[in-house]
Image (cartoon, one colour):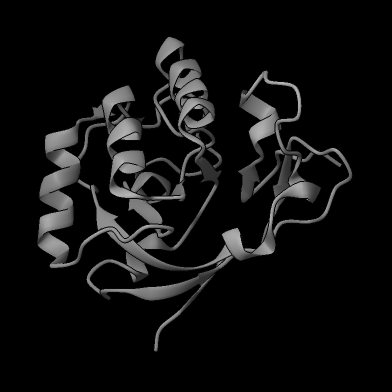
Length: 180
């Protein structure tokens, strides 16, 4: 079984070459039981890199602020525009620009989540986004679905406990949003 299949979270060990970078079984469960918000970036073009001004505008529309330790889910309408059966599904996804990854870390975000198989568009930018997570001490969830149901809901509880795979570089999870 792959530790990077379906909806899953990347452990620091996946992108941080430092000795002692945490594997999935070493990450505290509290990282996966957090307050969260969902940003609507569904208008972004396929394959595009989402900029900081786009992130700021989406955050402003929520009327919320990112709090330290929050999970930030990013709805890009990818699964609605490119079905899993479409060969473009593994390549055409939008994602975050490198500066947007740093911006999330600057806001206090601990984990962010996307619908696609990676946090940034395919290629060098995706490699840089993974490395930036390591540099900033944050991580990301890939392969989320139904984020459209969280747009406009305000703050909610996010629960997404990964499987405890010994020395795993990631872990499949069941992601759940709880509205109070």
